[in-house]
Length: 438
Ligand code: HEC
Ligand code: HEC
Ligand code: HEC
Ligand code: HEC
Ligand code: HEC
Image 1 (cartoon, helix red, strand yellow):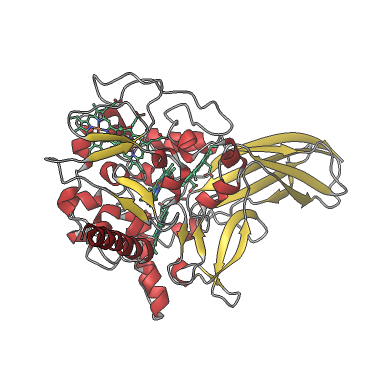
Image 2 (cartoon, rainbow, N blue to C red; image 1 turned 30 degrees about the vertical axis):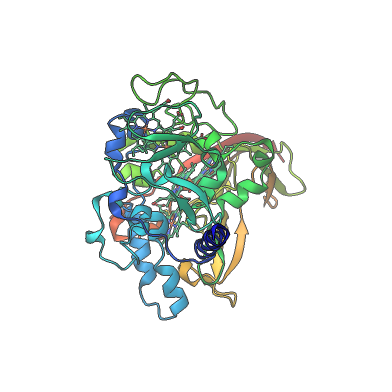
């Protein structure tokens, strides 16, 4: 009899493993099981302040996201394209999604729970136990049952103690895989890779050296960008008042390149941190002599653990701007200089990804992305060379080259009502000036 029961239990475990492991069905948890971030913040005040206002906190409130997502649904008729256009909330409203609302992007925004509106938050990340697949938010969870029975919060310590919640050491939280499960986005139907930060990191030298996403991004704080080009100094302290002193408390600002959304909230501290990060990513170097008529510009991505740009690299704008002036101060050569409206011409050298419809025609809407048409970016740890033909320009020249970054191209921004005609700031990631004798 016992044997039969054991076999039956083994069978049940096996089939539930199959069902959970192989189906793409959304896991479902009651909303009441998740604790709102400000509750965690009552003890973890420092971490809460870093996270509050971060792009993780703003992943739903972000107006660029909201407007582009809704535009993406407009005019679609193909069911596969609609299926993709409807999945955004998996990552942008993750607590809402796994607790049942919103199921689709087109669900009523105003009905999203208050906790859902808080975006990627404490109790979501710290209830994760692993992942089925390292893409499209395919996580495994073990949340508690609300604040009366908060369950176990997983993190980096094997000696943490809390009277309020259980604690457990989690290797997964120390690994890039945790981040990569969202920072690796694949079209649900066509399988096109839309966002590949984790894959780029996996191929980079940082993976071999064991430097995880957290080792850069969760060391950043004001004045200390924490990149491959800067010291990643420790942040000693404790995670609640009165708990153990640690040599490093992982920071939760989650700064990338986005300065527009924090800027709209007048969050000058985060705007500055985004600039500090961007300015500690790439080194620019020009050869002191031309190669034939060519000016040689060398770019080295020594600061980012992935391509530059990464993430939504189809809508970030990173480009080379080059200007040469003669001894009288007259501009004799230029490339990548935005026009009066702030738009770039076709000649500009731009680092970007472009998607296609499967027949070689470019598409802006990711829901329609059946192929990657073009991918030109700066790989981590690799030198990239660009050449500019100076023709027969002669004499003593002063040449300035810069690598510039815009969160969103001006022409795209001008099509978004929510940005209200905003001039998108250009951040100079790296710049060099040389004298050239021709
Ligand atoms: C009543 C105070 C209190 C509240 C509320 C609280 N915590 Fe904690 N938490 C602690 C203490 C104390 C520690 C132990 C710190 C240490 O030893 O470094 C801790 C540790 C942790 C750790 C580290 C665990 C490890 O093993 O590495 C995580 C993660 C964590 N808390 C997440 C949360 C989350 C998420 C919430 C909200 C759902 C929360 N905490 C609410 C007091 C609290
Ligand atoms: C995007 C996922 C994510 C979110 C959101 C998040 N955390 Fe964390 N947190 C982590 C990771 C990952 C680590 C451990 C990093 C490591 O060890 O490399 C961590 C570490 C911690 C620790 C341990 C700190 C230490 O160094 O001892 C605490 C406590 C904690 N988080 C609390 C919170 C609270 C409170 C919030 C919300 C205000 C929050 N976390 C939001 C991912 C997250
Ligand atoms: C639940 C999914 C999820 C997880 C897990 C997650 N992220 Fe994110 N992350 C996002 C989304 C979505 C955004 C963009 C929000 C927006 O721009 O509206 C984002 C934004 C960011 C940004 C800011 C990007 C910018 O352009 O400024 C950084 C940096 C970042 N994440 C790093 C991390 C790191 C490091 C980890 C792991 C510790 C992590 N993320 C885990 C979904 C996630
Ligand atoms: C060696 C340090 C380092 C590591 C490791 C690293 N990053 Fe970054 N990250 C940077 C720097 C520097 C930037 C700013 C330049 C840029 O935007 O690419 C950045 C930018 C970003 C951005 C914003 C991109 C944009 O402009 O929209 C995201 C998102 C991000 N990182 C996520 C991750 C994730 C996820 C991982 C792990 C898979 C990771 N990073 C690993 C240094 C690092
Ligand atoms: C599997 C997770 C995932 C899904 C699903 C997802 N995103 Fe994102 N999204 C991210 C991450 C991660 C980032 C941050 C990358 C960065 O900043 O470079 C991001 C950033 C963005 C941004 C940039 C926002 C800004 O302020 O610059 C837009 C726009 C966006 N997503 C739109 C969408 C739309 C529309 C959908 C649905 C069709 C969608 N996303 C589905 C993970 C996801």
